[in-house]
Image (cartoon, rainbow, N blue to C red; front, side, top):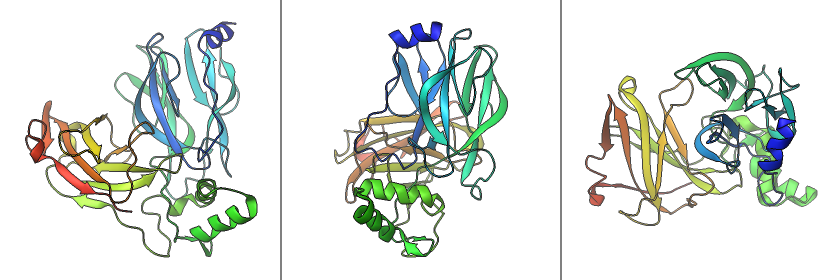
Length: 326
């Protein structure tokens, strides 16, 4: 009954139909509800009274081969949502539609997929769902499903079971009535391993990420988002990972030094690594080949903020630039 009342006043937005590249893995964010203090995990915009946090993993908006639906479940007793396969847990009521689609436990595609666990915070009496280790106050529970820890990137000339990806996409456009974005998404969903960075399997090699050395070595590259649009990806691997607890990225695209309006804190490295990864969200600017990116980095190092380059925040001339390539 409470769930019905909750949904009446705070309806969960339905997924809109349109040019969304639903067959491509899209980011699943962590959100915090300001009223209940619960953590939810879904794509797109915040639900009512929520604040969007970090990208936790990548899943599918619509079902592709090998995936199963992940539902949201409302627990009126604990006033929280959980996200998992199958039937409701104790005191839960199942939502009306899947929130996203993920892979069941088992085949991890040679390490491309990582387990997403449930976590229980005893102090807050709330669940969370993410990859990696427990955060402060959390106890790690069972793995619920498998997901990607980074987005898929379109590469037209890679080998997909004997045929270039671009040829498969062309066939889908000519014979199945798909547009380019839909066709590319379908191919990527069928052959995900060759569209993950490092999953190359023949054909013309895509442009490698630009590597920048320094206090906080990092790479910059263009990746596709859930709508098939080009976005900036920054991956930072500190030389002293044991001393670093947060990486911040500050950047703009085609605006020049002093106009860096995209500012994000990355609070956790990717599971099993010391690399902190940021991809421009859907509300941010596109990053087309030839775009001029102006940026600087900062890190929380032993409790102090350290910048790369030094004094990049107060002195705009010290900031770094990159010309996007793909």
